[in-house]
Image 1 (cartoon, helix red, strand yellow):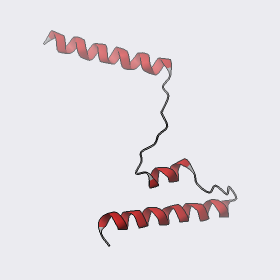
Image 2 (cartoon, helix red, strand yellow; image 1 turned 60 degrees about the horizontal axis):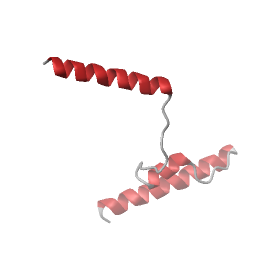
Image 3 (tube, helix red, strand yellow; image 1 turned 90 degrees about the vertical axis):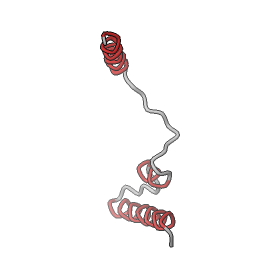
Image 4 (cartoon, helix red, strand yellow; image 1 turned 60 degrees about the vertical axis):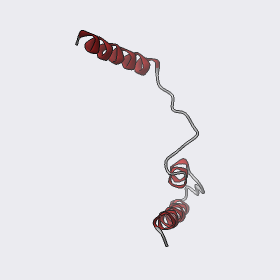
Length: 72
């Protein structure tokens, strides 16, 4: 087995173990988003949302960086 095959086999086993755990706990989650990240190597098609306050803080920080760069 080469490295990618080993990693894929490990990911599949982790998914199976999570499924067994969820069944034993009574949650019966067959495939959760956390497990999907394992299969897709952490890439997701969903987008994160950010609050208006978060956007404001990021914008202010960027303006400070621009001002600092402009002073130099």
